[in-house]
Amino acid sequence: MVGTSLIGAASASCQPQPTSIRPSANLQPRKVAAVASVSNRLATPRSAVRQPRPRAWHLREDSPFHLVAEGLHGAVPTQLDDTLILTYPPCGAEPYQPGAASRAYSYTLCAAQGDHFSELPESPAFSARRVYGFGLSGHWPSDVWLRYTFPPDDAGAREQFHQWDGHRWHTIATAPYNVKRLEPHRVFDWFDGAKIVAQSPHWHESVSYRVEPFLVWGKTTHPAPDFSTVSFPWYREDQNVRVYYDVTASHEVFVTHVLTKERPDRSIITIARASATGEVRSQTVLDAAGFSDAHLAFGRSGEREVAMAWGSTLMSANSDQVRPWLRLFDGSSWAPFAVPGPPQSDDNLSALWFADDRIWARRGQQVWQFFEKKWRPHAQVPRSAALSTPLPAGTMWATDQRTVIRIDPQGQSHTVPFIDGPSPGPWLANVYALSADDIWLEASDVDNEQLLFRTKPMKLLSCDELREPRGG
Image 1 (cartoon, rainbow, N blue to C red):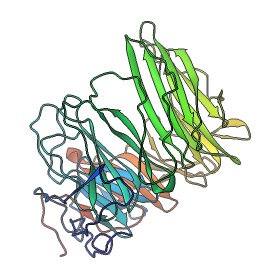
Image 2: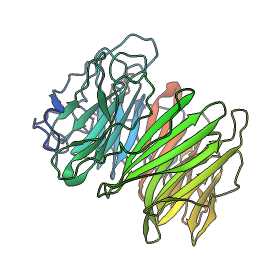
Image 3: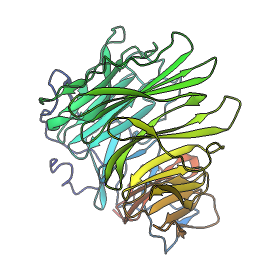
């Protein structure tokens, strides 16, 4: 439970609040340094009791959606457990531009709490560096991890982690630019409340095909798995290597190694897995001509907990033809799995989910579900549409330009009332289905202004610096 200055505050304007200071109990002190809240000199959102600015369009009276945030730029919504967190640069901040002068500021993090947004104290500032990417992971409200990504030509570490423990921010130390060492790359839950940390070389310019040793932060009797005995494929020339990490809720660790070799084009994908007891095995799941990538998904299919590896292989640089692939992990090895749709076409296998004890996939305009040992067409969506993950009953949501679509459990599409007015905008981007009655829409208006809509009413969060607030 966080302090009353965060959740219990009456203000819904996402303004910085005072917070108590306590050290993190789960992380090693030598790995984490406390960082004080930094004053943000740029504009912050105005009072949430104000009315939305006048617009050429308006929400239809029968629309289930409400405008809950406006005037944002560069905001990224992230779902942590059952809470949506909004991360965005300070109001008025310019987005990252290569070669532009550096400017230091803190990001703002807001959590949707009932009928308002509540803000964490400002994230630790980054000085004299431009962030060109960031992400959130962990759990709200007391274990939130913020990861900054910096440009590859910038001096210093490529990634920087900060952790919110429910009371204060902590910064994970990195090395000076001219020091060769490993840096935190991904942070996952581990046994006994500890964390397991995948590492990467501090000098990211150099090509590395190695899987670096894991760290464990916190107190636990379970050591990190050792992947040093795994022989991943590599070539000295013309290599493109990507390494991905996944850790399941049952503490199995998966390392996916993707090697793309040129002249001739060839992809070799190797997955190593460490069981919860630490036993490590590896297997080549794909060795084929063309350019390929790999993703992992975990969930239930019927009464079994399963893992799926999936991707699409581009046949050649001069062709649009792709060949999707799927592998099912049965607890000991990876086996080929049927692919929805034709073996080869112009359509990627672009998404794979687990919901309602079934496997779901999207390929082109078709959404599929796997049950009774067979892929079955479920629904069709526009090729350009954004699609939510399925809710437990199989309901899905989609957005396409200015249209909102609800797909029922039987696969039937229903247009949902949204906007009235002939003027362009807002243009819908992403849709997030947190529960059957909590749907979020991310949209953009003129000048790339970001808007958020929700099926639950909230006090308005605004970065509107053009008008004074109304109504108090």
